[in-house]
Length: 569
Image (tube, rainbow, N blue to C red; front, top):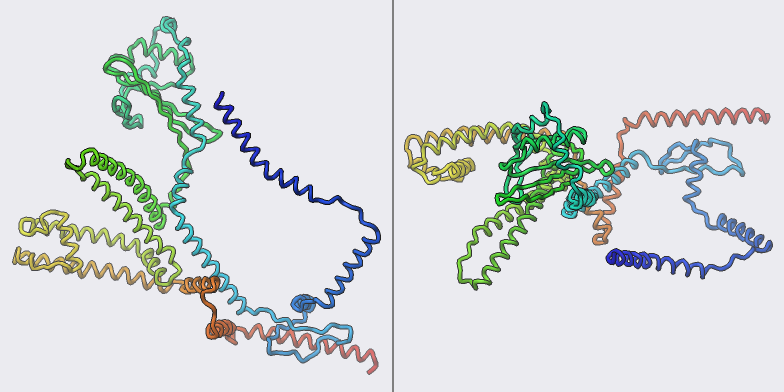
C-alpha cells in the first residue's frame, strides 16, 4: 500500500506539472483581453465609408494586369482564335463602339509546352521518389528493431500474469476431490478415453517435440489422456486412472498442456504445466506460459528478388548482433582468465577465433546485400537499369543452364579426382579438385602438371574439358546473356536523365551552382525545340480553325449587311 501511495503521488505531481503551463497562459491571455465596448453609430458609418474609399482606391490604382488578362480570357473565351505571338487578326468580329471593351488575345500554353511542363513535373516526382528510397534505406536498422518489437503483443504480460496468478495459486484446496470420491466410483466398462490413455502415442501422432525440463529431457511421445467431457465425467475418469495405476513408480514426468484464446485481443496462450518425479523421491513442478500472436501472411512477398535481398540483410544483421554478444562473452572470459593467471597459463583461443570468424562472415554478407540493394536504388540510371532488367529477363534461362552446367562440372570433377587423386596434390580431395576445375574454367591453371602426371589420359581429359566447358558451356552462357540484353534494350524505356536532373535541382537549390548564359540559352533552345511539330500532323487542326474563322466572318458580314439595309444605306 505504501508503494501504491507513492506511485499515486508521483502521478498527481506529473499531472499538475503538465497543467501548470497551459493554466498560466490562459490566465495571462484573459488578463490582456480588453472589455468589449459598444460602437457608436457615427463610428460605424465612418468605418463603412472608409471601406468604400479604400476599395475605390485599390480598383483605380492597384489593379493587376494579369488578373485583367485572366478575366478577359473568360469573358472573350468564345472569340479566341488561338493566334500565335506573331499573328494578328485583321478582321472585325463584332461591332466596335466606345462602350464595347476591346478584345485581347490570350496566349495560352500550347500542347507542346504542356508536354514539356508535364515532363519536368514527372522528373521532379521521380527525384523525390529516389530521395525517399535513400532515406528509407538509411534508417533501415531502426526499422528492423521497430518491426521486431511490433511482433510482440502488448497484452502478453497481463495475460501471462493473470494465468500465473490463477494456475499457480497455492491457496487453492482439493476439497472437491477427496478419498470419498474414489470410493463412490461405479465399476464397469471403461470408456474409450481411459483405454487410449494406456496406449503409447509417438511424437508424430501427437505433433510434439522434445521438451527440456529442469531435471531431464523428455521426448515427444507418451501416454495421453484428453480432457474432453463434463466436469463430473472428468472427475470420474481421473479417479479411474488413479485406481488403475496410470501414474506409477515408472512415471518420470506428467505434462498438462492447454491452449487458451482471448478474443478481445486476439491472443493465443500455450500453457505447459510440468511435474517431474525425481529419483530421490519428490515432485518438482514448473509452469511455462507462452503467448502467441498469429498474422495472416502471404507468400507473394518472398517471390520477389529484392525481397530476398532484404530478408538476407535482416537475417545477417540479427545474426551479427547475437554473435557479437557471444564474442563479447568469450572476450570477457579470456580477459578475466588472463588477469587471474597474469599470463602464466596457456589460453586456448580456438573458440574465440571461431566466433570472430562467424561474426566477420555475417558482417561481410550484410555489406554484400546492402551494396546489392544500391542496384535497385540506382535503377533510374540507364546502364544499371539495363543490367538489372537483363538479369531479370534471363533468370529462368540461367537457372536451367546452371542445372546442366552443374551436371557437366561434377562429371569432370569426378573424372579428375579418380584419375589424379594419387598423382596431383590439387586432386587429393573433392574440395581441392573443385577448386582446380574452377581455375581451369577461368584459364588460370598451369596444365603442364596434368600432362606430366599422365602423358596419355591428361591431354585427353584437358581436351574434353576445354571443348565442353570452356567452349560450349561458356558460349551458351554468353549467348543467353547477349540475347536477353538485346531483347531488353529493344523494349527498354529510356530514363537516363533522372539522376542528372536530380543533381541539377540540388545544385540550384543549395546555390552551389548558378546558371550561366550558355545554360540559360540551352534551356530556352530546349523549350523552343519542344514547340516544333510536324505540319502534316497539325494540318487537320489548322483546317478546323480556318473554317471556324471563315464561318465567323461570314456571319458577321451578314449581320452588318442586315444592319445597313435597315438603316437604308
